[in-house]
Length: 110
Length: 153
Image: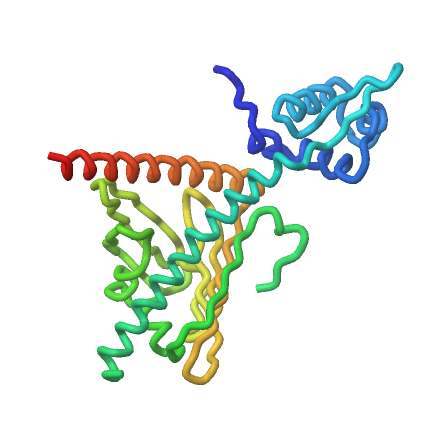
């Protein structure tokens, strides 16, 4: 099976979300990121690779260091779908509103 | 219900002021005959097989899609405060819905909060919904297309 590489996959893991939060305001180098987490450097490298494959992180080589920069544009894709999902629930309220008007007419004749 | 930063990534909050007294809104919500008339996406009909409005009581609902597909929904009521509050736990996907009713004279303010167990579950549901929406749009497109074809004949 080919692993999915999209923005949902990227943020589906707590460590990856924490990495994005960490580098959202400014780029960090890979060592600094690894020090902040209680998991092995290899594990961090793997998570960074997944984030890069998903298009949420850009890894740049600067001299002997590798810097990670967040690519936050991609995240707006998720919020757009969350909005759509919210809209789905809003439409329940629309239907309730319409139905209440009908009920009022039947009950009170107004 | 107040939201806080720890739940921000796994919840949906919507609210609406409805132009009806709380007694009527409560009835529309809690009477199976009524709720079947407005629950579910546009174009769907609903059959409520069980609605035991007590804490621990089951709520079984089948949504019938326009294409004939049935979608079973199961929830367990957690808290019922007449004219004030309904809390239920929806099973698969798992989320807790809290509906607060606030009497405002002849109107009622409804606050609807849905909290998913984990951010992962929430993302999964949003993603599935995205897939469903895409599917629905495709079906609509196909149906429009077929109408056009028929019109031409």
